[in-house]
Image 1: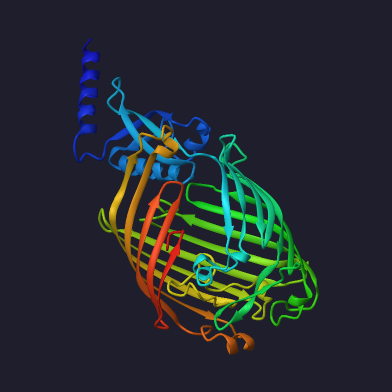
Image 2: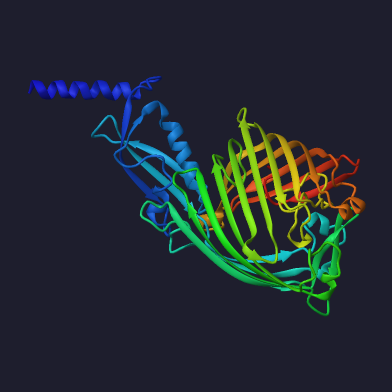
Length: 466
């Protein structure tokens, strides 16, 4: 009887010590983990992202941070619109917890309408509104196939340029969920291509009655993710091109006059990702390095490139944030076929204020900076007339940014120097933007910028600026 009283007294003391304010030296035990809302997703896909397991003993003072990082890990799988991680004290023990992970799954099967502008980005296309050279079609996306985070994509693009292809990716093959693989292939049929740059802008060649360029490609790749935040990707791809006589005669587009060219590409990427929300981060950091050898073993081309990016995000308060990003690329040799060369002005590698320009070269460096304030802090609204939470529960936020970007492209080729004054020149842009962020990784970035040429402009993007 006495021993029972002593044991009960010790448990009662432990109970109050654990729940006492400021007492971070005590520990808690994860008694069990409950998942709610994952009707399709396999439990192991969610459990893999948690920074703890059933039976783990954790420092009570560090528990909120551990739960928050686990919530971010689960959300960054891009399988869920909302993720909540709560705890429940078990009445039978003062130090044992149940962790409850609640999710709202996304809609996983999408026939996504596809529109490709013949220009490098929508802003360059808005200069002309030329609908004749649009490519349109569908991307059939099957996310989270079999509930195992597998993705199958079917591409059917028609119009001026045609593209048919598929990709399949499965991130986890083994029991530890560290190895995965993917493969894909396709065919491109182009009546319009960017054949060079004149006056710092893309020069398009059209052949409405025939084919300028054909491409067939295939690849296989492997993934290794040993922990939560580091990723390795290795891929081997094969490309086959056939060029029309018009392109063979275009200066700089090819480095030889062979109408048919084929080559293997060996590619490696390492990524370290500690961002809170990958598609629109507000705190954390990101680093990657990419190496590519085009013409691996043998082939019609022989190029080697290294590209790296670093981005850092700060949260100063509930509303104020800052970010900086640096991207650099080095590639060899200096003289490269234009159809394989990209500098600043493509994809995310854009200096704001220079969206209308393409600055090509084998070497470039670029920096972006942001000061951000939340006009509308992240919140959730529920639309009662939409019955499914996949669409009826809507998270959103609105941000105002002040930004300044800068960059430099080096290209020693004389032809480029003569025709394009922005090559080998310091470039800069500054201005402000408004970002609207909501579910399904939707970002709408509208910015007003002034570039170092003294040109103002209004531009739109659909990815986070940094």
